[in-house]
Image (cartoon, rainbow, N blue to C red; front, side):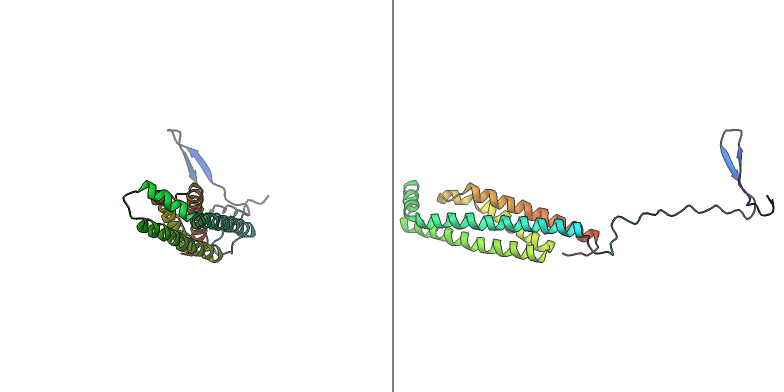
Length: 195
């Protein structure tokens, strides 16, 4: 082996205190370490993977199923409220004997119309959020769902509180918040701020 062609190697010297020192000759260069063969797990410039899109589509389908279930349940209960309105108003007259029956009737009908208007806005926002997939729409939907959930509580005074509707609205609120956080997090990862 020719010594002129050999690469100079570093020399390690031990100091009296036990520490090591590296000594190199002039012109010595450390060999650069090999690059890692792995690509980044998630590159912000790349489009979403098929598995992420599949998960998002599955969550949107569950969300739309929840909205359809909510529509079915609320339509059935509102139909029952309209069908048995005379019995309900008679019970309200027994509960509140000092209140004029016309006032009770108007309050009862106002509650029916308010629930129908709320259901329309609720479903419109939910369907728009699911089809457009924007975090801002899911956030608005979750606010409307929370207002509707808490709006069920005063209906107990009109003998119209429905535990199933309360539960479904709360689940819709929770799922809307979940979808909002999921979409927002994916937007942060892909650097597409979909707000």
